[in-house]
Length: 91
Image 1 (cartoon, rainbow, N blue to C red):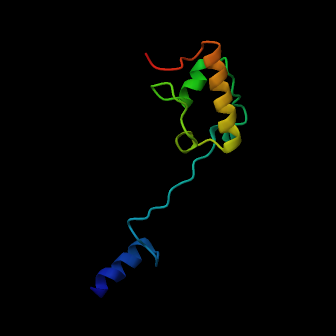
Image 2 (image 1 turned 180 degrees about the horizontal axis):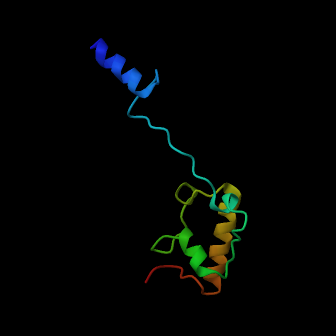
Image 3 (image 1 turned 90 degrees about the vertical axis):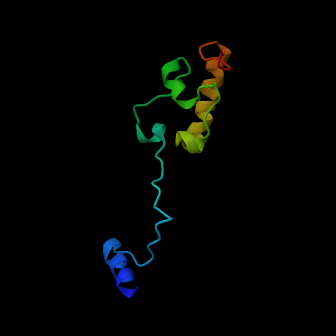
């Protein structure tokens, strides 16, 4: 029994190793990460990355956007819907 624990510690080099809890990499905001990326409500291809197949705006946990840019995404999608570039719902 002690040998198994010893091997596990040597294998992972971590005293607090627990296979249930893996380190999750934090998502980087696509707008903060790329300074050349400019969000535009007239570019429907760009906005489709931030909506699902039913036409709903994806949440921050799915898009990985920061709070500031998630608000910008929401405004851009709503403007695009208003001028009929994006649909309100899927057909």
